[in-house]
Length: 409
Image 1: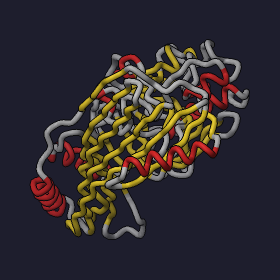
Image 2: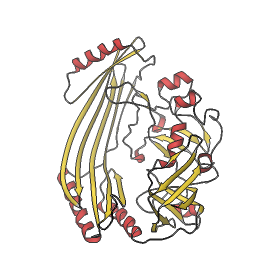
Image 3: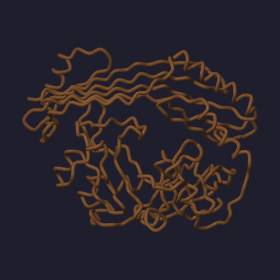
Image 4: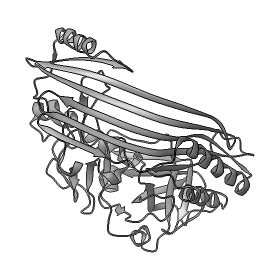
């Protein structure tokens, strides 16, 4: 019998902002402990929140072995590794003061707008350890915000937003993102033309990838339900398109370098699509074993659940060009808010865009009217794929550029 502990701790400072004022400040410090036992091809799990009696957790997990939940896979073993991505951040008091200073500047510079939502200072620690030599620890800390922006005269609930994710709080960088957004917002412009043209998505926007993620599911590929079922090892996309599952330091993700089963990929990444060729779907131990697929370390679960297949953090490898160079003299649409879009089962994409900007690749020029975008999966990442910028020209983001059909709503 093998015993294993899966521990997740989250410490968070939440600054609640209403009407461009700090309304309240909240703190939480939550530890969740999962206890697993493996025996004769079965797994039993027990879990608790807060201070726990480990003997009680072990008893609960042992009792749950009677549920006969199959887990005929060898638990990860003989690997000890700790990764600490944390950077120095302000104290809680200093952080709140910094936010108040930011809001004071916004009230003066943009009196016609109101800002709301939360700004978080979040610290994560995850540990997975067992009695066959596994002891993995991941630590990280982020400042995260998505400020909701509303014109005082607007009837909308939200008119724009400004996001910030970094390990270090930099007021000037956050301010510049807000200024870039609102200076462009206040300048209405028109499309150069309707029809096929470059569209750029922010690096953290998964909208254009939702179908790729869905079809790269290892279980779906293995059962023959995926569009890619016959294309593993085949080139279906652009030479310059490479998609990774990645938890490297630069990725700024809350995913750990190990998955919920303790699988650790070399250099904390796994290539799913390389230079247009579909290399592998993403898998956990069950899916890899069941369908004879490579193990990519894609298991996730709650602290008190059995690990199951789930997409983790995906990243497109940047090009060696700036956004300006990728656009090659063309103007492009920057997608800021797009809700209500989707792919069909066949891979046809369409979405309305509630907020979009026009860019020349160096700056945001102005705000466009509401638009609709459309494309097709294989074209989007094939002949219509332009590339991902190596630089962050505005909004503190790299951008992914595709040619899509653009129309006014």
